[in-house]
Length: 95
Image 1 (cartoon, rainbow, N blue to C red):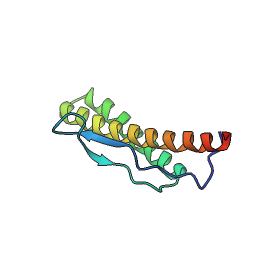
Image 2: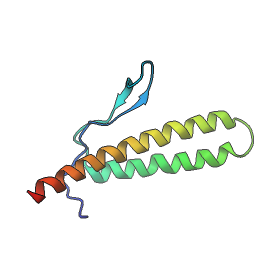
Image 3: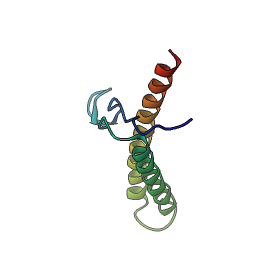
């Protein structure tokens, strides 16, 4: 799939559930170029991967595991929002 420069995040994806069920603390920003968003998601998931390795060794394992959880949640939210944008672009081209 060719990612076009004019495809941007939708700003529809929320994350960080807190309090009541289905209540989230954060929402992705709309209007971020998809290529920039994917690069950032890659960085987040790379950090999460390193944190999981740290969690298997030494001290502060709980803190490392929680950090990895939050980083993974953020990376997934970015990917979900980019997917929504790309699917909408694809659907508009099919019509």
